[in-house]
Image (cartoon, rainbow, N blue to C red; front, side):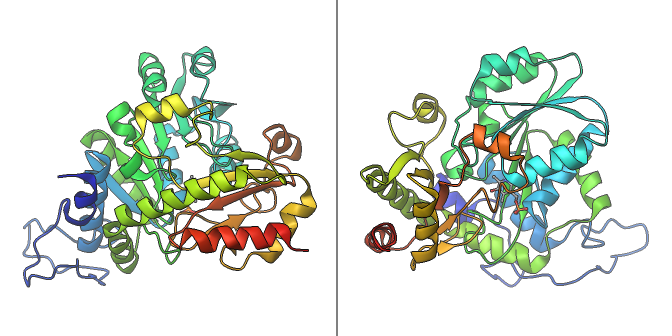
Length: 378
Ligand SMILES: *Cc1c(COP(=O)(O)O)cnc(C)c1O
């Protein structure tokens, strides 16, 4: 089954009444079939039929042995970190979603895990940081928000040679454009809030794993922590996933048009977009991905221009998040990356002239006209 068909039909269950959409099993508990008789469901923190259907679809899309749905991407990451208890060493990308940095620096590190943060697009550098107690390499590719591209296969080899896990946050490209498990990753993380849900109406997160054994270990923590995705939210994400392929196709096309247009504007100093042939990661992207995604970052000539755009946009919305049908524009310095020490943020180019755009599914001409009036107006 091809990926776009899989969005709709992969792991499709059989409802006893023939319902084509998975019903919302809004029940906390389930009646046991009999004393000492196995029932597939007992309590919804552990598992729920609506969640099981969604998890099976996500596992199929990523080519994983198992997938676990969480109440948010951060809930998924927090449960993932329980794999490492409170010791050992993790090599992590240095350009990450701000919440991941907060988790690693302010929760995992104080509990005893040691981190090295590095640009993982430089595989040699990653290799040089391996230590006897390295337990994992954590990668976001492309990274957020400066769009560094990491060679997943190369980093997987480094991780496995050291007996460590490779964990990849695949939120930006989705299994439609990138399948990290096939390239050697052990765990894939998603913020399902973004492209998978796709409508900016629910939070969700996923861990997808390459072995049943890893899935079982994570399910133990998942049921213990209890940050599970509710039946209604599972329904919304499943509905979103069905249209993922058509949404992403339009979003990626819009992003390409916006990126090219921005590059032609004198007020725009730099455009970060992995679909440009002169992007440093273009060769790796062409090798390991089947699309360039729909995320763009840009650096303007002055903070005044950046603020003017945020003030004036009408079709694009000035809001955090990404991946939904609405095009969003954010100011990472004040929003997603506000918790990162200023010197570090600036060193990576995330300054007061830096904006990030998530292309939605609107007509591209309306988006370009909106950006034009925002850029040229007073
Ligand atoms: C949003 C996001 C997360 C966190 O997910 P939530 O659903 O907001 O908890 C993690 N990684 C990336 C790349 C994200 O964009």
